[in-house]
Length: 274
Image 1 (spheres, rainbow, N blue to C red):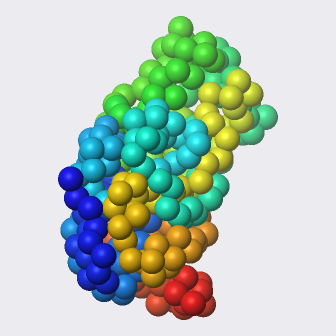
Image 2 (image 1 turned 60 degrees about the vertical axis):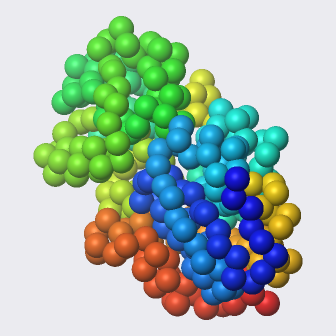
Image 3 (image 1 turned 45 degrees about the vertical axis):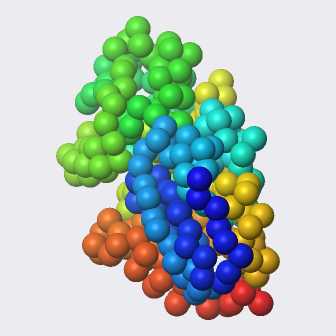
């Protein structure tokens, strides 16, 4: 079990999900911890691996959990041993999207994908998904059934974040008609005109907050100043897209992308330490 000692330079094990938008969100907190004098050991992996480690006390902090809906199944695994230490940003959400060049009067909602005429017009009925343990993947599997898409040939292919990025890049360049599972924050939303589809059956949860979680004993043992500053960390969703873009398009590592954003936004950052 890893628990922080009562010192300003306590060594912390900090977990994050191994996808770039999660990595940059977590990196902001990492930089704050470094400025507070902590040594930070970052560990990362997919959702199903990270949450059990937090529940077991194998990490002190974890970012970021989409609550209450997106990561609901994982929160149930850790809620007895974890605390919500800070709300990093708000408005995160899952959805399926189509290119804006597909007429909105033909495809406005997920239900429209079940129309035979729409399905026939699509270049592909395969939606490229991310990892099997992601909340988006699990809900996408359910909506394919809920909206009657499976009978028309729609199906989801399990992959990872890079598979979604590559698919969107290739299909947008080709002018294909396709649907893609997507979410905010995600830099692709800033690069392409992708229209989220209405979800009349509520397959996806309402917009979530993205939170920093802490193993309860570790949080209680942290210096008061660390808890005070960390609890104040909050930034706009747009900042995550900006940092995510820097990683994926400019080749920066997540911590450098976070530091650059923090340097450009001193008023926000200084408010956390005030």
